[in-house]
Image (cartoon, rainbow, N blue to C red; front, side, top):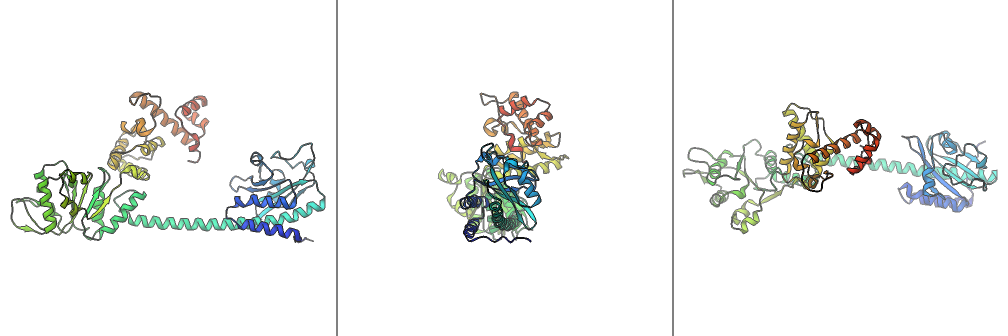
Length: 509
């Protein structure tokens, strides 16, 4: 006849205390230790442990303990079916050991039990959720009677069921929390993708802010002023604003004002007696002025009048033209300084600076570097009839460490060059220009006292890249990496140390 597990009055206080502890936090590890302390205080035991089974590795390890040191905890590891604890978890049955010295299955793996100096009794009960055993609860006490150990097993079985309920609660809470996080990420990704223009690559926080401004301004006809360093993609933003506007089906006309004679810029803007200029060609659409800060004083004045009056005449006079144009201007220069120096009209500045959007430099959107690199690698791979499968780890390190003064345009040129040089469908670090190979930009130079480059530097960078690639392929296994490179493990260790490489970083890659 099966005996019911009914606690006595003194045990009820312990169970109530344990249930309160288990309810105090969703962090299981933080509540198990106080539970075992309460158990030890009430039952006057020597040791207590909670061991859990790893479903993937089938290994059993101590999750929390009372009376054991950190080193003893670390040694308390078992395979399923190994030792008393392993067999309890495998069979899901209680095991009482009256004297551990007489039990061959008791392994004393932690080394905490005395040898030849007294004896101990051991009780181990399974922790079960539904029909699945997830771990065990065990205690050690000085040798006790059979009746005492039977009572211990009964009480521990109740406590194990409380722990199992706590684990189930936390698993369901974690699963629900994970579900909500995944749902939030999915919704955020949908929102980000909805806002991100199709012609721009990048998911960084800095670019998300830009996308929101593009979405806000696109539906209006307000003048937009794009500011940012050279090569950040101001023209792409201008085209995105045009594409998202109601003028999308009409022309997008670009006039480049940089480093060009004043009369050429004026003619391209306002036309000539025989030829229409940008204002006319963009009728119904968008006129984009690239580097407006470069135009001369006379063109600035004429442009200001055209914006203010909404009309102009072609070069050489003639009929007044009133185009329907949305104007977007850009500059990479310090316009405020130009105004201070008398080189740019303040009234024109206030006329164009209605809705300003700052395009961040690439160094402020570093999470976009690899996205852009992959995009350009695929693009130029197709153009050059090459299949670029991947960018090597050392090459990625170079890309992410470099400061990119030329921004996205420099990155694009760098990847285009690498695609052309690649002969194994992989972009390697040595395919990049010398500007990415310096110690200052990449931190990969080794064995140099000066800042110069040359053959020695190139060879050192190539050697480091080969080491990194071998370690990545072997998931950080030094011996396997050495075999792949055809060198001894001693030489491998020496070179890894010399280049200050951390093989552990590749173990989970």
